[in-house]
Length: 141
Image (cartoon, rainbow, N blue to C red; front, top):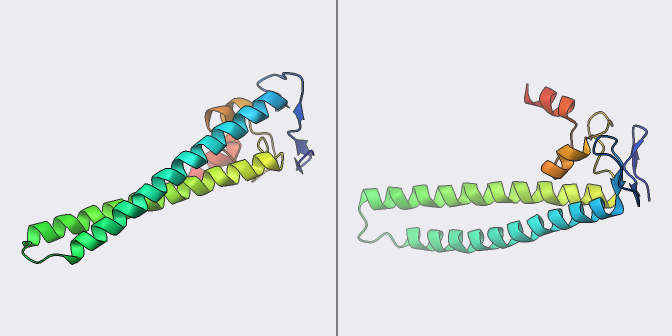
């Protein structure tokens, strides 16, 4: 199943292909899929642990009898920090899930913005990449 966007395809082939031509071997796609799934599994576990920690912190802050203002403030800061970390983990998890969906649709080497080729080395170094270097640079500005 060859995914296409802007005339580009990243169809896996049984040959190796060069690092620059956008052609992915079946083994390379399998390795990318395995990397993404491994990160999804790890982040899912981290998020579950963070949710438990956050519930514990919320329950702890409800029991403020005998705490001075500094303790109450410290607990609030810790709770906000944990909530921010959990939100960040959720965002990164969503990016990995999206990247895996793109692999399944054979779009892992196609830029979501311009439809051009995302260099294989970029995707291998940063598996969540959905934009080519030019589009990512333009997005940062």
